[in-house]
Image 1 (cartoon, helix red, strand yellow):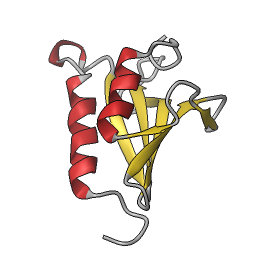
Image 2 (cartoon, one colour):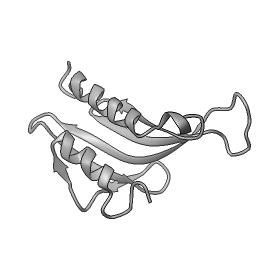
Image 3 (cartoon, helix red, strand yellow):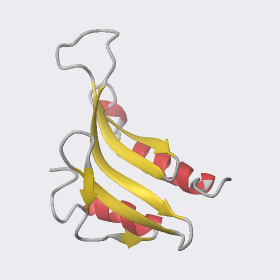
Image 4 (cartoon, rainbow, N blue to C red):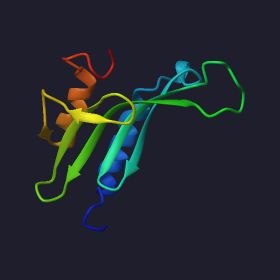
Length: 114
């Protein structure tokens, strides 16, 4: 692991968390995915193309970005803004991975799941 990488156990926990948010009954309509990029993970919803184009890539709608802070072994949470931008999440800026995922799950401010 290099200095900016997320521990593999945390990556696995995030991916497992995403998989539990994708019920088998709706997996052909929506899925929750994690895209790892260095110390950051973008959690997003993916949906099939709106025009039903078979073979077309699914459309991605970012929900949150979590960033691993190696020096403190904590996570920062950001909410998706316009386009590919993110802004600090006001409710919980930093915490353990469990705290951050629970905050996204509970969504007390209605910014992640609507």
